[in-house]
Length: 68
Image (cartoon, rainbow, N blue to C red; front, side, top):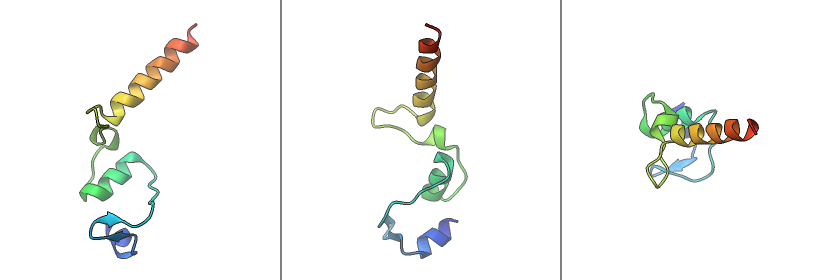
């Protein structure tokens, strides 16, 4: 998949020239790094929190709010 996207013209000098939709955060991370990784554990916000941390905190907030 990575090579196909690189050859498609959607990436020039390792910079995307248009938005690329991936099926998951892991697929996007795999494309960027070139090998298989866990997207939720790899992607980080500017403050250093992983996507997994953010998802867990939002899930916990929804669980707490629905218990009211």
